[in-house]
Amino acid sequence: MPRVSVLMPVYNTKPEHLREAIESILAQTFRDFEFLIFNDGSTDPQVEAVVKSYADPRIVYASSRRNLGISGARNRLLDMARGEYLAVMDHDDVSLPERFARQVAFLDEHPEVGVLHCQYEDMASGRRSH
Image 1 (tube, helix red, strand yellow):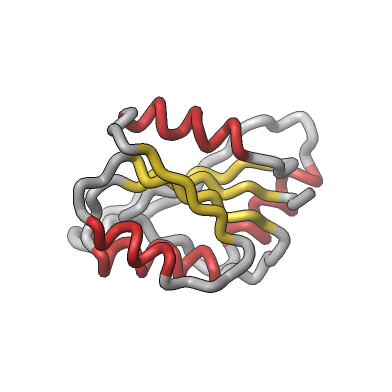
Image 2: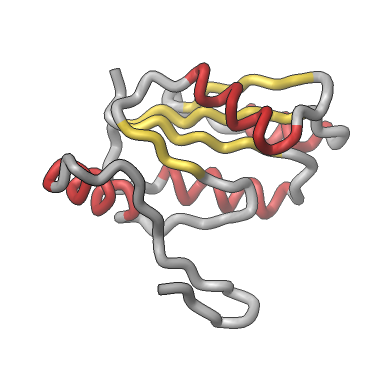
């Protein structure tokens, strides 16, 4: 069983954004994860082609012919997940390399915590959340 299940629904995103998102997950310093990618009825065949271009065995790809919407897609991903922890990833986001290492360490040290989030930076505007 992997420690982390990464849940990433995908719908008609630009190939360059999808590649950047996937590569940011595959570059994590914490390696014990499964990467669940669900194609939520994309009409752009490049979405599937991009995902299938990666040979990493941690990637588990599934798809739907019809669009389920973000909640339906995430529920499908939850059904697939086997990890102790869940990490939500959007198809147009980028995770820093130590994201999972830091999150898993924090959750291991604080079993009373059930949910946490990340700081983010809007790369176009430079705005950050706290």
